[in-house]
Length: 399
Ligand SMILES: Cc1ncc(COP(=O)(O)O)c(C=O)c1O
Image (cartoon, rainbow, N blue to C red; front, side):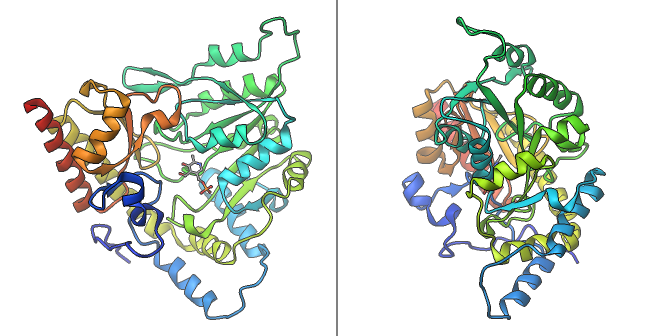
Protein backbone atom coordinates (compact mmCIF):
# COMPACT_ATOMS: atom_id res chain seq x y z
CA UNK A 1 0.00 0.00 0.00
CA UNK A 2 1.27 3.48 -0.86
CA UNK A 3 0.78 6.19 1.74
CA UNK A 4 0.40 9.85 0.77
CA UNK A 5 2.38 11.91 3.28
CA UNK A 6 1.89 15.08 1.22
CA UNK A 7 -1.79 15.15 2.06
CA UNK A 8 -2.75 17.95 4.46
CA UNK A 9 -5.48 16.83 6.86
CA UNK A 10 -6.81 19.28 9.44
CA UNK A 11 -6.29 18.23 13.06
CA UNK A 12 -8.20 21.17 14.44
CA UNK A 13 -11.06 20.52 16.87
CA UNK A 14 -9.87 16.98 17.59
CA UNK A 15 -8.54 17.65 21.14
CA UNK A 16 -5.13 17.90 19.49
CA UNK A 17 -2.43 19.43 21.71
CA UNK A 18 -0.38 20.62 18.76
CA UNK A 19 -3.07 22.42 16.74
CA UNK A 20 -5.86 23.21 19.19
CA UNK A 21 -3.59 25.00 21.68
CA UNK A 22 -1.92 27.27 19.14
CA UNK A 23 -3.55 30.49 20.32
CA UNK A 24 -2.98 29.70 23.99
CA UNK A 25 0.68 28.89 23.47
CA UNK A 26 1.73 31.24 20.69
CA UNK A 27 -0.81 34.03 21.06
CA UNK A 28 -2.37 33.82 17.60
CA UNK A 29 -4.35 31.31 15.52
CA UNK A 30 -2.27 31.79 12.39
CA UNK A 31 0.96 30.37 13.81
CA UNK A 32 2.05 27.04 12.26
CA UNK A 33 2.65 24.72 15.24
CA UNK A 34 5.99 22.90 14.96
CA UNK A 35 6.74 22.30 18.61
CA UNK A 36 5.42 19.18 20.39
CA UNK A 37 6.89 15.92 19.08
CA UNK A 38 4.08 14.38 17.14
CA UNK A 39 3.56 14.18 13.41
CA UNK A 40 0.94 15.66 11.12
CA UNK A 41 0.51 12.32 9.37
CA UNK A 42 -2.22 9.71 9.88
CA UNK A 43 -0.85 6.48 11.32
CA UNK A 44 -0.51 3.16 9.50
CA UNK A 45 -3.69 1.52 8.22
CA UNK A 46 -3.16 -1.82 10.06
CA UNK A 47 -3.14 0.14 13.34
CA UNK A 48 -6.36 1.95 12.47
CA UNK A 49 -7.96 -1.38 11.51
CA UNK A 50 -6.88 -3.03 14.77
CA UNK A 51 -8.26 -0.14 16.82
CA UNK A 52 -11.59 -0.13 14.96
CA UNK A 53 -11.85 -3.85 15.38
CA UNK A 54 -11.19 -3.62 19.12
CA UNK A 55 -13.61 -0.71 19.52
CA UNK A 56 -16.37 -2.88 18.03
CA UNK A 57 -16.21 -5.07 21.15
CA UNK A 58 -17.87 -2.68 23.60
CA UNK A 59 -16.00 -3.64 26.76
CA UNK A 60 -13.32 -1.18 27.72
CA UNK A 61 -12.44 -2.34 31.20
CA UNK A 62 -9.15 -2.79 33.03
CA UNK A 63 -6.54 -4.14 30.72
CA UNK A 64 -3.54 -6.40 30.85
CA UNK A 65 -0.86 -6.75 28.22
CA UNK A 66 -1.41 -10.30 27.04
CA UNK A 67 1.31 -12.63 25.76
CA UNK A 68 0.75 -11.41 22.18
CA UNK A 69 1.56 -7.84 23.15
CA UNK A 70 4.66 -8.79 25.12
CA UNK A 71 5.79 -11.07 22.30
CA UNK A 72 5.43 -8.20 19.83
CA UNK A 73 7.95 -6.21 21.92
CA UNK A 74 10.29 -9.20 22.37
CA UNK A 75 10.18 -9.99 18.63
CA UNK A 76 10.82 -6.37 17.65
CA UNK A 77 13.94 -6.11 19.80
CA UNK A 78 15.25 -9.31 18.22
CA UNK A 79 14.34 -8.31 14.67
CA UNK A 80 15.56 -4.70 14.80
CA UNK A 81 18.62 -5.01 17.04
CA UNK A 82 19.27 -8.72 17.49
CA UNK A 83 18.71 -8.03 21.19
CA UNK A 84 17.29 -11.14 22.84
CA UNK A 85 15.11 -10.06 25.72
CA UNK A 86 12.97 -12.17 28.03
CA UNK A 87 9.21 -11.55 28.21
CA UNK A 88 9.38 -10.97 31.98
CA UNK A 89 11.78 -8.04 31.48
CA UNK A 90 9.05 -6.00 29.79
CA UNK A 91 6.82 -3.77 31.90
CA UNK A 92 4.37 -1.24 30.61
CA UNK A 93 3.94 2.40 31.48
CA UNK A 94 1.48 5.02 30.28
CA UNK A 95 4.39 7.14 29.06
CA UNK A 96 8.13 7.35 28.97
CA UNK A 97 8.18 10.50 31.10
CA UNK A 98 6.17 8.68 33.78
CA UNK A 99 8.58 5.76 33.51
CA UNK A 100 11.63 8.00 33.93
CA UNK A 101 10.07 9.56 36.98
CA UNK A 102 9.28 6.11 38.40
CA UNK A 103 12.81 4.92 37.66
CA UNK A 104 14.31 7.91 39.47
CA UNK A 105 11.98 7.42 42.41
CA UNK A 106 12.93 3.77 42.68
CA UNK A 107 16.67 4.50 42.59
CA UNK A 108 16.99 7.49 44.90
CA UNK A 109 16.41 9.08 48.27
CA UNK A 110 15.77 12.78 48.77
CA UNK A 111 18.89 14.79 48.03
CA UNK A 112 20.45 12.24 45.67
CA UNK A 113 21.78 13.34 42.30
CA UNK A 114 20.90 12.51 38.70
CA UNK A 115 23.01 13.44 35.68
CA UNK A 116 21.40 15.06 32.64
CA UNK A 117 23.17 15.91 29.38
CA UNK A 118 21.93 19.38 28.55
CA UNK A 119 20.58 20.73 26.34
CA UNK A 120 18.00 18.00 26.76
CA UNK A 121 14.26 17.22 26.58
CA UNK A 122 12.96 19.53 29.30
CA UNK A 123 10.49 17.23 31.16
CA UNK A 124 13.58 15.40 32.47
CA UNK A 125 14.20 18.38 34.76
CA UNK A 126 10.91 17.95 36.61
CA UNK A 127 11.34 14.15 36.74
CA UNK A 128 14.48 14.80 38.81
CA UNK A 129 13.22 17.72 40.88
CA UNK A 130 9.81 16.22 41.67
CA UNK A 131 11.58 13.28 43.26
CA UNK A 132 13.51 15.59 45.57
CA UNK A 133 16.77 15.05 43.68
CA UNK A 134 19.41 17.40 42.32
CA UNK A 135 20.37 17.78 38.68
CA UNK A 136 24.05 17.39 37.85
CA UNK A 137 24.72 18.69 34.35
CA UNK A 138 27.12 16.95 32.01
CA UNK A 139 26.71 19.44 29.20
CA UNK A 140 27.11 18.29 25.60
CA UNK A 141 29.92 19.95 23.65
CA UNK A 142 29.08 21.75 20.43
CA UNK A 143 31.99 21.78 18.03
CA UNK A 144 32.12 22.07 14.24
CA UNK A 145 28.34 22.05 14.01
CA UNK A 146 28.12 18.70 15.85
CA UNK A 147 27.38 17.63 19.41
CA UNK A 148 29.60 15.28 21.39
CA UNK A 149 29.49 13.91 24.91
CA UNK A 150 32.03 15.33 27.32
CA UNK A 151 33.43 12.20 28.95
CA UNK A 152 36.14 13.96 30.94
CA UNK A 153 33.46 16.14 32.53
CA UNK A 154 31.24 13.10 33.12
CA UNK A 155 34.04 11.31 34.90
CA UNK A 156 34.81 14.37 37.01
CA UNK A 157 31.24 14.42 38.36
CA UNK A 158 31.93 11.19 40.24
CA UNK A 159 35.20 12.43 41.72
CA UNK A 160 35.32 13.61 45.33
CA UNK A 161 34.49 17.30 45.50
CA UNK A 162 34.49 19.92 48.22
CA UNK A 163 35.46 17.72 51.16
CA UNK A 164 33.50 14.66 50.02
CA UNK A 165 35.28 11.34 50.55
CA UNK A 166 35.82 8.81 47.83
CA UNK A 167 32.76 6.66 47.30
CA UNK A 168 30.41 9.20 48.82
CA UNK A 169 29.00 10.45 45.49
CA UNK A 170 25.25 10.82 45.64
CA UNK A 171 24.88 10.31 41.89
CA UNK A 172 22.46 7.44 41.43
CA UNK A 173 21.75 7.55 37.68
CA UNK A 174 22.10 9.31 34.36
CA UNK A 175 19.17 9.86 32.04
CA UNK A 176 20.58 9.12 28.60
CA UNK A 177 18.62 10.36 25.61
CA UNK A 178 19.31 8.28 22.50
CA UNK A 179 18.61 9.50 19.87
CA UNK A 180 19.09 12.79 21.60
CA UNK A 181 16.27 15.32 21.74
CA UNK A 182 16.83 18.17 20.86
CA UNK A 183 20.26 17.91 19.20
CA UNK A 184 19.36 14.95 16.95
CA UNK A 185 22.43 12.81 17.64
CA UNK A 186 22.26 9.03 17.35
CA UNK A 187 24.92 7.93 19.81
CA UNK A 188 27.24 5.27 18.47
CA UNK A 189 28.35 2.12 20.28
CA UNK A 190 31.67 3.70 21.19
CA UNK A 191 29.95 6.62 22.96
CA UNK A 192 27.58 4.28 24.77
CA UNK A 193 30.40 2.03 25.93
CA UNK A 194 32.40 4.98 27.26
CA UNK A 195 29.36 6.39 29.03
CA UNK A 196 28.37 3.02 30.47
CA UNK A 197 31.85 2.30 31.79
CA UNK A 198 31.99 5.61 33.63
CA UNK A 199 28.44 5.58 35.01
CA UNK A 200 28.10 1.90 35.86
CA UNK A 201 31.73 1.72 36.97
CA UNK A 202 30.85 4.31 39.59
CA UNK A 203 27.87 2.34 40.85
CA UNK A 204 25.12 4.36 39.14
CA UNK A 205 22.34 3.20 36.79
CA UNK A 206 21.67 4.23 33.19
CA UNK A 207 18.08 5.19 32.46
CA UNK A 208 18.05 5.12 28.69
CA UNK A 209 15.25 6.99 26.93
CA UNK A 210 15.11 5.43 23.47
CA UNK A 211 11.67 6.67 22.45
CA UNK A 212 12.99 8.08 19.14
CA UNK A 213 15.04 4.99 18.28
CA UNK A 214 13.17 4.05 15.11
CA UNK A 215 13.22 7.53 13.63
CA UNK A 216 16.61 7.49 11.98
CA UNK A 217 17.96 9.32 8.99
CA UNK A 218 19.70 7.36 6.23
CA UNK A 219 22.91 5.65 7.28
CA UNK A 220 22.28 5.67 11.04
CA UNK A 221 21.68 2.70 13.26
CA UNK A 222 20.37 2.46 16.79
CA UNK A 223 21.94 0.40 19.57
CA UNK A 224 19.80 -0.24 22.64
CA UNK A 225 22.06 0.64 25.58
CA UNK A 226 21.37 -2.59 27.44
CA UNK A 227 22.12 -4.75 24.40
CA UNK A 228 25.85 -3.93 24.58
CA UNK A 229 26.88 -6.28 27.41
CA UNK A 230 25.53 -8.30 30.30
CA UNK A 231 26.92 -5.70 32.69
CA UNK A 232 25.06 -2.90 30.91
CA UNK A 233 21.93 -5.04 30.76
CA UNK A 234 21.95 -5.55 34.52
CA UNK A 235 22.46 -1.88 35.30
CA UNK A 236 20.02 -0.12 33.02
CA UNK A 237 16.39 0.68 32.43
CA UNK A 238 15.52 1.05 28.74
CA UNK A 239 12.46 3.05 27.75
CA UNK A 240 10.90 2.18 24.40
CA UNK A 241 7.53 3.01 22.88
CA UNK A 242 5.68 2.89 19.58
CA UNK A 243 4.36 6.40 20.24
CA UNK A 244 6.90 8.54 18.33
CA UNK A 245 7.53 6.01 15.56
CA UNK A 246 3.88 5.42 14.70
CA UNK A 247 2.39 8.69 15.92
CA UNK A 248 0.43 7.17 18.79
CA UNK A 249 1.29 9.49 21.69
CA UNK A 250 -2.37 10.01 22.59
CA UNK A 251 -2.70 6.30 23.36
CA UNK A 252 -0.30 6.55 26.31
CA UNK A 253 1.57 3.27 26.08
CA UNK A 254 5.28 2.56 26.39
CA UNK A 255 7.27 -0.57 27.08
CA UNK A 256 10.06 -0.40 29.62
CA UNK A 257 12.69 -3.11 29.48
CA UNK A 258 14.35 -3.87 32.81
CA UNK A 259 16.43 -7.06 32.78
CA UNK A 260 17.56 -6.80 36.43
CA UNK A 261 14.83 -8.20 38.70
CA UNK A 262 15.75 -6.01 41.64
CA UNK A 263 15.58 -2.87 39.51
CA UNK A 264 12.35 -4.09 37.92
CA UNK A 265 10.68 -4.80 41.25
CA UNK A 266 11.76 -1.41 42.57
CA UNK A 267 10.36 0.29 39.48
CA UNK A 268 7.02 -1.47 39.78
CA UNK A 269 6.76 -0.92 43.52
CA UNK A 270 6.62 2.84 42.95
CA UNK A 271 3.05 2.23 41.74
CA UNK A 272 3.49 5.11 39.33
CA UNK A 273 3.03 3.13 36.14
CA UNK A 274 -0.19 1.44 37.21
CA UNK A 275 -2.89 1.09 34.53
CA UNK A 276 -2.56 0.04 30.93
CA UNK A 277 -4.38 1.69 28.05
CA UNK A 278 -6.50 -0.86 26.19
CA UNK A 279 -6.23 0.92 22.84
CA UNK A 280 -2.55 1.60 23.45
CA UNK A 281 -1.59 -2.06 23.71
CA UNK A 282 -3.85 -2.91 20.77
CA UNK A 283 -2.06 -0.30 18.67
CA UNK A 284 1.38 -1.36 19.91
CA UNK A 285 0.84 -4.94 18.83
CA UNK A 286 -0.49 -3.97 15.40
CA UNK A 287 2.30 -1.41 14.89
CA UNK A 288 5.11 -3.76 15.79
CA UNK A 289 3.66 -6.62 13.75
CA UNK A 290 2.28 -4.89 10.68
CA UNK A 291 3.53 -1.29 10.67
CA UNK A 292 6.85 -1.62 8.89
CA UNK A 293 5.59 -0.92 5.37
CA UNK A 294 4.23 2.45 6.56
CA UNK A 295 7.35 3.14 8.61
CA UNK A 296 9.65 2.59 5.66
CA UNK A 297 7.69 5.09 3.59
CA UNK A 298 7.52 7.54 6.49
CA UNK A 299 11.30 7.46 6.92
CA UNK A 300 11.80 8.15 3.20
CA UNK A 301 9.44 11.08 3.47
CA UNK A 302 11.12 12.47 6.59
CA UNK A 303 14.51 12.20 4.91
CA UNK A 304 13.03 14.17 1.99
CA UNK A 305 11.73 16.79 4.42
CA UNK A 306 15.13 17.04 6.04
CA UNK A 307 16.99 17.40 2.73
CA UNK A 308 14.49 20.03 1.59
CA UNK A 309 14.83 21.98 4.86
CA UNK A 310 18.64 21.86 4.99
CA UNK A 311 18.85 23.12 1.41
CA UNK A 312 16.31 25.85 2.09
CA UNK A 313 18.20 27.21 5.09
CA UNK A 314 21.53 27.01 3.29
CA UNK A 315 20.36 28.77 0.15
CA UNK A 316 17.76 31.18 1.44
CA UNK A 317 18.17 31.69 5.19
CA UNK A 318 21.91 31.27 5.81
CA UNK A 319 21.81 33.24 9.05
CA UNK A 320 20.06 30.24 10.64
CA UNK A 321 22.12 27.05 10.67
CA UNK A 322 20.38 23.73 11.32
CA UNK A 323 22.50 21.14 13.11
CA UNK A 324 22.73 18.02 10.87
CA UNK A 325 20.04 15.59 11.96
CA UNK A 326 20.83 11.91 12.56
CA UNK A 327 17.70 10.80 14.38
CA UNK A 328 14.29 12.15 15.50
CA UNK A 329 12.32 14.60 13.33
CA UNK A 330 13.28 17.52 15.55
CA UNK A 331 15.69 19.91 13.92
CA UNK A 332 17.90 22.01 16.19
CA UNK A 333 18.36 25.43 14.67
CA UNK A 334 21.36 27.57 15.51
CA UNK A 335 19.85 31.05 15.32
CA UNK A 336 22.75 32.89 16.91
CA UNK A 337 23.53 34.48 13.54
CA UNK A 338 20.40 36.60 13.99
CA UNK A 339 22.09 38.31 16.94
CA UNK A 340 18.98 38.39 19.14
CA UNK A 341 18.42 37.86 22.84
CA UNK A 342 16.46 34.72 23.67
CA UNK A 343 13.38 36.75 24.45
CA UNK A 344 13.61 38.61 21.14
CA UNK A 345 14.22 35.37 19.23
CA UNK A 346 11.16 33.74 20.77
CA UNK A 347 8.96 36.74 19.88
CA UNK A 348 10.46 36.94 16.42
CA UNK A 349 9.55 33.33 15.59
CA UNK A 350 5.99 33.45 16.85
CA UNK A 351 5.05 37.06 16.12
CA UNK A 352 7.00 37.91 12.96
CA UNK A 353 7.62 34.54 11.28
CA UNK A 354 4.41 33.03 12.70
CA UNK A 355 5.93 29.65 13.37
CA UNK A 356 5.52 27.86 16.70
CA UNK A 357 8.82 26.33 17.83
CA UNK A 358 10.17 25.25 21.21
CA UNK A 359 12.69 27.86 22.33
CA UNK A 360 16.20 26.52 22.88
CA UNK A 361 16.43 27.93 26.40
CA UNK A 362 13.69 25.52 27.51
CA UNK A 363 16.20 22.69 27.07
CA UNK A 364 18.60 24.06 29.66
CA UNK A 365 22.29 24.84 29.40
CA UNK A 366 23.53 25.24 25.86
CA UNK A 367 20.06 26.06 24.53
CA UNK A 368 20.48 29.81 24.31
CA UNK A 369 20.26 31.12 20.73
CA UNK A 370 18.62 27.92 19.42
CA UNK A 371 15.11 26.92 18.40
CA UNK A 372 13.70 23.40 17.92
CA UNK A 373 11.65 22.82 14.78
CA UNK A 374 9.48 19.75 14.20
CA UNK A 375 9.71 18.82 10.51
CA UNK A 376 7.25 15.90 10.62
CA UNK A 377 4.52 17.50 8.57
CA UNK A 378 3.37 17.44 4.93
CA UNK A 379 5.84 19.26 2.70
CA UNK A 380 3.37 22.01 1.72
CA UNK A 381 3.18 23.03 5.42
CA UNK A 382 6.94 22.79 5.79
CA UNK A 383 7.48 24.96 2.70
CA UNK A 384 5.04 27.56 4.00
CA UNK A 385 6.83 27.67 7.37
CA UNK A 386 10.23 28.10 5.75
CA UNK A 387 8.92 30.82 3.46
CA UNK A 388 7.54 32.66 6.49
CA UNK A 389 10.90 32.50 8.24
CA UNK A 390 12.72 33.62 5.10
CA UNK A 391 10.46 36.66 4.67
CA UNK A 392 10.72 37.60 8.35
CA UNK A 393 14.53 37.32 8.31
CA UNK A 394 14.74 39.39 5.12
CA UNK A 395 12.54 42.04 6.70
CA UNK A 396 15.00 42.20 9.58
CA UNK A 397 17.75 43.28 7.21
CA UNK A 398 15.58 46.09 5.92
CA UNK A 399 14.54 47.10 9.42
C1 LIG B 1 13.11 12.15 24.51
C2 LIG B 1 11.66 12.06 24.83
N1 LIG B 1 11.24 11.28 25.85
C3 LIG B 1 9.94 11.18 26.18
C4 LIG B 1 8.97 11.86 25.47
C5 LIG B 1 7.54 11.75 25.88
O1 LIG B 1 7.19 10.45 26.10
P1 LIG B 1 5.76 10.06 26.67
O2 LIG B 1 4.75 10.82 25.88
O3 LIG B 1 5.72 8.58 26.43
O4 LIG B 1 5.78 10.42 28.11
C6 LIG B 1 9.36 12.66 24.39
C7 LIG B 1 8.35 13.42 23.65
O5 LIG B 1 8.63 14.33 22.94
C8 LIG B 1 10.72 12.75 24.07
O6 LIG B 1 11.14 13.51 23.05
